Image: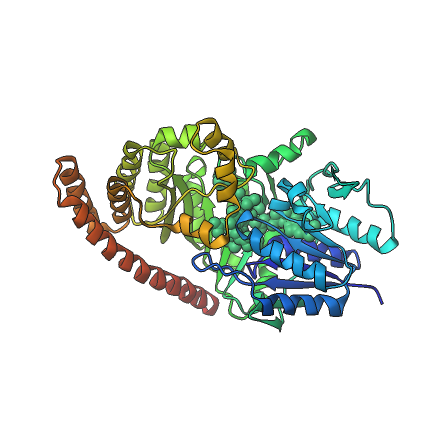
Amino acid sequence: MSRPIVLVNFYSPKSLGIRYLEGSLRAAGFEVAVVYFKGFHSARPQKPTETEMEALVNLLREKSPLFIGFSVMSSLYLEAVTMVSRAVREGAGNSPLVWGGVYATLFPERCLEYCGYVLRGEGEEAIVELAERLRGGADLSDMPNLAYTRDGETVVNPVRPLVTDLDSLPMAPLGTGEKYSIEGVLKAGDPSLTSVSYETSCSRGCPFVCAYCSTVSLKRIYRSQNRHYLRFRSVEHVIAELTAAKAAMKNLSFIHFWDEIFSDDKAWIEEFARRYRAEIGLPFDIWAHPGKTDAALIAALRDAGLYQVVMGIQSGSPSVRKTAFHRTETQEDILAAARVFADCKVPRVIYDLILRHPFESLAELKESYELCAALPGRFTLQMHGLNFLPGTDIVEEAVKRGLFTREQLEEMMYAPMEKQYASWWESDNADPDVNFWYRLTYLTQFPSLRGAAARLARDKENGKPSADGAAARRYALARKMARARHVWKKGWAVLKGKLALKG
Ligand code: B12
Ligand code: SF4
């Protein structure tokens, strides 16, 4: 009997990457088992327990895989992945441990301290070749995408070309094959099948180059290949996948599109909107960009079921956006995009903001308040801190400007996950003026509090000492309102999906 391959995803029971790899391996005739190791709880991140690690180790011992693949996407959970890797290497026999995913792609040398091999970049073709070479006992040293250690030195082989035709990749399987999840205990079965939502992507890549995002570094790895980094699937292929998901998932009532920025190609959107509405008809959400928000296309998507748009504004200061974040949109572009969402009556609009970091002065934070106060329509603000991701341009920018030393950044980027998430969500700052403008920005998302925010802004400018305390009280109230709104909106989206299925 052939030995299976076991793929492990961390901190998310949904992973397109792992599902695509499973599809390619199975299409090439390999047996695959997938393990989802712990769920995604960004507000309460938890390290793996001994029992959870033991459950994985026991399963791997029983399976004795041809190799074990870990998907290592971000540095935020690195601590957990390294703990599990140690436990697996000590307890699960001698199956090679292979890391892949965004983090492993960018930092093969660091990863090789914990695993035998790293497979960098897009993985579908690479993982099949690795499986074939390992099964046949072939030499791995010249394998494209592979990084490994030879005589104490890290060898990083070049990556193979990107897949140009995304439709040619085997569909990500759903509801078939061997699946497990581990949260406290090991459970057999595909957790996706009972979910109310399905996640997919119509494209790979992003045309932008934001300094805090890994996209730029990933693009650089492929730059010499002279191929388009941004690629799209055909509408036919996407609809076929969603039709299959609808048939397999009895609770399905929402589709999340994980495209980094949803397409704004006119012909593609028109065909997609028409077919999605007729054949899928479920509410869905997308990520948008101020530079790619066309009124007619958003209206077409709205008619097709667009329920939620998330758009990064990141800062209300043009200078912070441009010089620190490498984003070129103007205030007017942002306001125009917001007007499109309001005019098209997109039911839920979320704006993402990265605030209270050393690249931003108090005056620039105030500009975020002013921009948010001017945004038309109803919206939700997702406000968080700046998370320095290893390998991103903003890390270099911070060193260049003398904001942090490399050592300080290393400490922050590789801190325990609880610490990294605490600074991401942190709601209070040592400086009362910073807290004031931050809180006022938060209030702008509630039409009933916008008037109060404007009055408080005037009071603050006029030096009224009561302004800080009043802003803190309104902010506490607004946080409660936000929690209630979140539960209500989520419930409404699911209900709409159920109604769409009945109708
Ligand atoms: C959807 C998404 C999520 C989803 C789902 C995550 C998941 N497990 O798939 C959710 C919301 C849960 C999420 C959470 C987070 N995310 Co996220 N996410 C994405 C996004 C937009 C798309 C992921 C995706 O589906 N890509 C499409 C698939 C096909 O690609 P892929 O996953 O990279 O997999 C391919 C290869 O990497 C490789 N591969 C992957 N795994 C393996 C394993 C092996 C063995 C091999 C050989 C190959 C291999 O082959 C796959 C097929 O080609 C990416 C951006 C991006 N471009 O990828 C960010 C991204 C991965 N996320 C990122 C971040 C920072 C996070 C969070 C830390 C955010 C937060 N503050 O909480 C968390 C961390 C979660 C975690 N478990 O580690 C960063 C990671 C950067 C870094 N190096 O640290 C990215 C790159 C975006 C960015 N801003 O730069 N995310
Ligand atoms: S638009 Fe989003 S995905 Fe694209 S580079 Fe910027 S942050 Fe990254």
